[in-house]
Length: 316
Length: 315
Image (cartoon, each protein chain N blue to C red):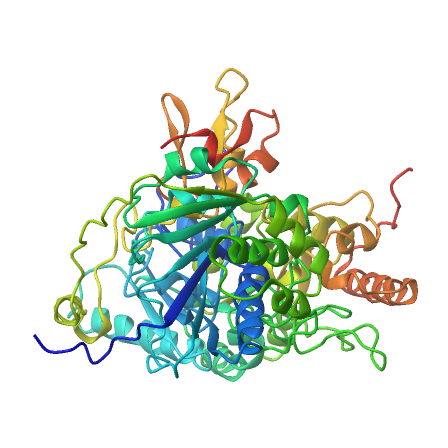
């Protein structure tokens, strides 16, 4: 890994914007904030690959885009493949003396569809071949661009247009979500760095982007990106949702290197999952037994990465 | 002088403007309720959403359309209403949008969901061209908006038609225009009591004088073709993307109290739209692009930012 400049605080974060005003994302959009923070951390020598998703469609309507750096659309199936080609082309042009600039940062910004579902094979191929690319999943836990359909990362119990609550399946979504950071972490020998990030913790997120880009090979970053439209909470609560997800353990912040988990925030205790779920209409139909099932699942996920602090309900 | 082969003299067009996601259902319900009522009177009808506005995003202006005619509708494949007889605003700050009365027929009607008076709303109109009647109805006091993704973008609608603020708004449309019979509208809406309140309590103001609409130069298909990027390649913007100006999405705008502001940068880091700039003079807001999401107000640790209704400002 090469050296990189750590951002010490919000106040000392760079002023320069590379994801500028003027895009058709929702008011209070979590994925848009992901993009802005990633672009800010990565800086000017960056190329973005955008597989189909909200961050392609909402950002490029119509015939324009908000990126100050080069951006290219990839199909939802092949973000990893397009990035592999761009990374290799620059590497070979530099080797042959046909390009005198520095190797650019190559970043894929894929949604949960483009990273954990339809695009998973292309991501895996890219990691397997060892390309020096940072693959980022901005996870808003549904196919949001097409009107909120279920995706592999949609949480248990969440309403989507494909998982409505009914008599037979009262909880709506009956599966527990795919954990993509762990799917890719084990089984890709050249993968250098895996981490999770949250827009509620922007300094941590930006430093993980820089650390991922400083690796000598592929890195994977999974970012939690609350979606006010799909999760059905008011748009001014996006940051509160992101923080509550971490404070309840619904989303675990860590780095995974050399087979070891390193936690990114030291929680003194965890809030019960209901503290997070009660603000979102997608969970409004759930009964106490469903919440209990969710709590047990989250407890187990936290234990997996070493979050062992107790769950403590707020004093009434 | 040849006869206009495309003329449809008995066709009435209704265009409904609303805010994406939060009012999409109510906008759709206004046109569906009115056309279903008209269908009971053996009219030819059409109700649909503007595909260009979809997928809708929170606060983005979206349009739903209706066509009602005693004749078969020849223009049924034209996907936007080009010359509305009636324009409806489901949310009052849309009145600042200069596109709302585009193509309005002479003596056309504007119906606005607001607590304000017709005179007050009239002051905010960028252009009054062709406007004959302005109607205000306080639909939010008569019913509650239905916020749902059920029925959006082709999904099955399991919530019924006209249960929310669409009912009183449709009632006001009928009061001002008589486009359908009240009893037919009553039979299709889920909340007939609210619909009747809208009909009875709306305020109708006829304008003394109809100002002619100023002709607007439209881009032709050839103009658009000339602007088409080569092989899908466009230049990167530098400080803003003028191709997608989003300032008219907001219903409230952030106002900062610089005395209370500690310049901690929290609002700045959390703005998804990069609409806050750190300057020597403190935090500056870019209202040309601000969508009014209020994340700055929600995250400010010192309570220095307040969201103020857009119609408290003339500009």
